[in-house]
Length: 207
Image (cartoon, rainbow, N blue to C red):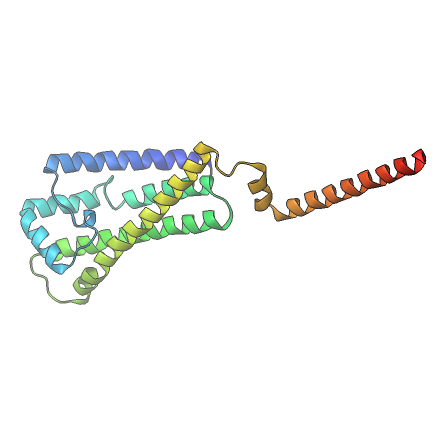
């Protein structure tokens, strides 16, 4: 991924997050389901009841605003994917980018589930959409945070290695390229044989 993608996704993430923080501030920092690691139907019902009509309307606007929470997953997941692509290589980079895509999908799914709960509250009839939202929403939240933790730990581990210089010696670089390592070993063997032949030739000449 290019530097332009990294910069644009960083700017977009910062802009959306700043707007969301401003909305939270104006609303008095209300509780949110998507900020809870574990939640279920009972937690959701109690929280939405606590918010009241105005609080629930503000909650919906937080999602549907042009720079709201429905846009945020696309911004920050692209930023994370760009960072992973530039920090790693090979299969590790591909798997981490796939994890970033999964985080985006889980976050959007979570947001849509919470929106469905907000629209149906307080009359939660047991229709398929509500049952699906209550079943999928908490799982999406947990999966999102679990993947984010893995991605963050991998990036921090990589950056610490880069800053401390761990793994930058010649031996690890050869291990990372076994073909080059084999060729270097063959060259060393040929050089040793040449030195032995010269030594034997010098010994015979002295006799």
